[in-house]
Image (cartoon, rainbow over all chains, first blue to last red; front, side):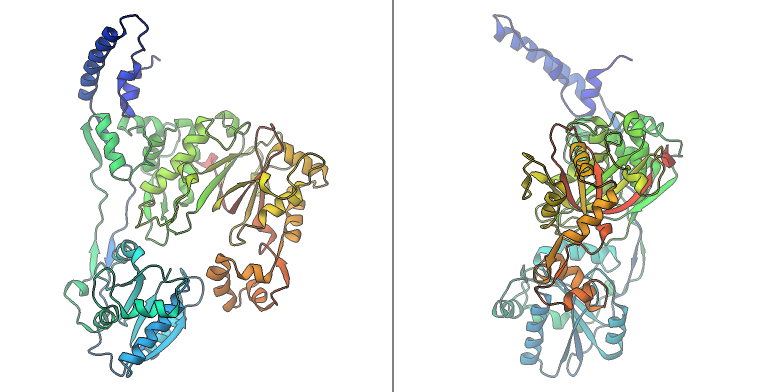
Length: 143
Length: 437
């Protein structure tokens, strides 16, 4: 099968002008000018050639909206769990959060917990504990 | 949980946290941001973070947290239901190839190198490389802890065209896509991926397992590896910096991954796919994931001036690897033959030697990043061997890798010199290519 180099080059976005050879004659400037005009002509021709591309993307799942949990009327007298996901420094940051509550909102009880397992793993046991004993959660994901 | 919650996230992950919350159904999640990073900071510095402003909103951080837990929800925050997600029109154009090239690039659908425009004609030609129907569901893929995208054989064909594959390569591309493993992963770690190809298809496609076998010297090696990355972007929604890709430095290996075609004829040992239970005549692609590849020449004792002991060289090379991933040895046939001369009749014998002789102290082990992030939480849960290792004294000596199965060996290369390479990568899965012809 004959190769249509012009079409192939166009398909990857390159100008077919690259197919033009280099001048070796004495009147290089004149030759170059002629080639430039020819290339420009070919470029215009190329720009008229149009194709349709196909969308390569897969199918994203629909998003199921989750209503957020109702907020508390106040934090006074409430228990706030401070959950460390295990990233570097999260525990130290949450220690400062606990300190802030003790200085600024002393009626708030803070409970520190490190989530079980590596950071991406779920910890249903801790979630059950928080639901049983806590009123709010601050989760620090660190780095 | 039904309990009001506020995630505190460092500023560097603003897009990630916001977009991930939206993808998971909470587009209005109340997220408080701290300065970045928090690791390595003194208590006084972290106290300043907590007492200072949220660097995104500019509001006092802890007042914001209190508000997020107590200010009543808006109507939007209470919404339920389902929202469809679109990836745009089915086709682009008609337009000039140059403009379309730019369109694919500007919309994050390429690896930022020129692609072959996937016209309908080119996709149809690619589909001649398989007997499977275009609309057959092929798999689902996620480039991290995200809801996965799904795709068909035709979707894979479009991406294979873009990568420059020929139709006869397509069964390998389909096998990779069917694994559902993305070669771009949302982590700050800049992970790398690799594939090992075995079976007669290696010669049928003229794949390179000789000189420069890991380099850019053969069309199937180059384009099949590239197709995996482009698919990871377009089929798995991966590789969006700040959203589904967070590698701090990135990884040059992600351009076309590490395509390893085993030299089965020159190897003194059984081919990798046979080790995994396949027949020699079967065509198989095996997938690895991890961090990167290092050359054996940097190991202690790597001089081949006298009688090289590649077992010790490689073991030394592994000493910098994380045991979280495995060690994948890529042995030039000259190295493999020498190892057999040393007495290793099978890959399994060499693997056992690696496991027993690649060791570290508990102190060194605990100082490693992955030990803290992954092994220590498991140790707290009583998972072995980590639970026992964390109870040992600092000067106790333990295996560098948790199990012998952490090691894998393949043979490839041009035999111009006895140089092995090794990747800090774990074996994932082996997939039949023949199933996709």
